[in-house]
Image (cartoon, rainbow, N blue to C red; front, side):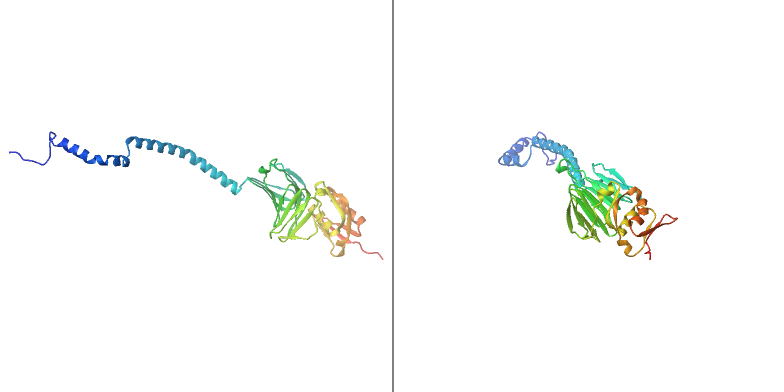
Length: 296
């Protein structure tokens, strides 16, 4: 006695006819299925294309990242070289900068030099300095040259110019070319060769500015009817020990002449013969200048 389990054997004669019936039933949908379902060749081609794109991305992305980094550095304008130069009291020095500019420092001065990718920035901490600015042969390669000092910015426009710090501002004078002087309040003024300007307390000032940069650079102190109080101030810049001037109208006495900066003690000794004053030298090296008593 045998039992039927509901499964067809391999020799079931109905199986081929069932397959044919399924193919006949799917025949009307063959074209649609072919459009919906990708062939093995299509799949292989897409895989190869994706692999090629991945290789390109590995090359392009680092290049793009490097380009973005370079653009960021140019925009940020970082300093790639910084140095500080200074002179002691009574000393003068000439410094040749890497860009070809020449920096001349007067007595007791300090300048911080910062070379940036897109600019050149100087800071006159104190004292006086003459800037002879070098310029690129091609305008597109030109980097701005700026000097900051005592709440003032000086922009070079093809120039040799002098900057001197004062108690509350700076004096700026131009030997050649042109500069723009900008005070902290945003007001500015352009100066041409032979002109000078001053700032005080962050504002442009009407203070009288003596343009004597060429004189001190050559080691000379040139006086042309200069008040004695101003003469003493200049002498003091080159001396360690004090020069004390009696208070009062003695400071209004005018002095003229040309003297060597390296021999200012001779000027002190000559004052009694040039003006009605007396000079007293003290053991500590200081000097006192008083009005000569009127003889009766």
